[in-house]
Image 1 (tube, rainbow, N blue to C red):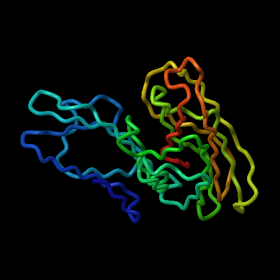
Image 2 (cartoon, rainbow, N blue to C red; image 1 turned 45 degrees about the vertical axis):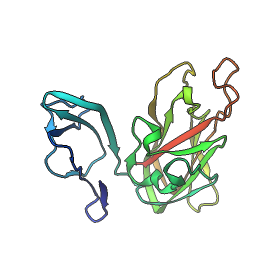
Image 3 (tube, rainbow, N blue to C red; image 1 turned 90 degrees about the vertical axis):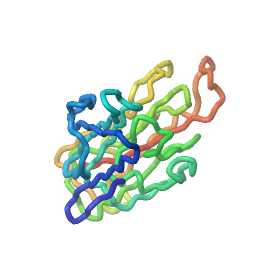
Length: 231
């Protein structure tokens, strides 16, 4: 169970272990958790952007796969967003609020944390509510080429003071191989200096199709989008 305390600017993570003899260990330094890692015995409070890895053990034997969860305390957290193109209801019920809830998607887009856009580009506007200093803007995407989940052709970032007139502040083109079978989450981001704005717009171009040699040629390409992070 995950909850966010706005007053304390803190995530609280509570995990219920219902199986007898099952123990949970976790790490926050990027290492693989083992029995010598931190043992979960009380709720975890997160006050900084953090990646946590969890592993279950029964005795000396690890049970299941390592679960990775990321938390972002960003200037975009819980801010109002507007999508230009509707997401699919197949993922997270199409709930657009997951893009700014501060909880990053994990290493499997099918179990949650991502919005899906099939044969559609992605465009979002974030209202930061007031003019805000900006140093970095990121958008998370998932890639699983065998399932036609691809990174964008390009991702462009815009800012505005009035929500009507936008200027581009950077474009990211991420090279990747369609032959790479890896399933992974990737942040696409730009760094800024001496920049202020109230509104941020992010546009990501869907690849739309794959080459004829690809086993899934002719299928519809997905963009799987995760957390918007503003620093």
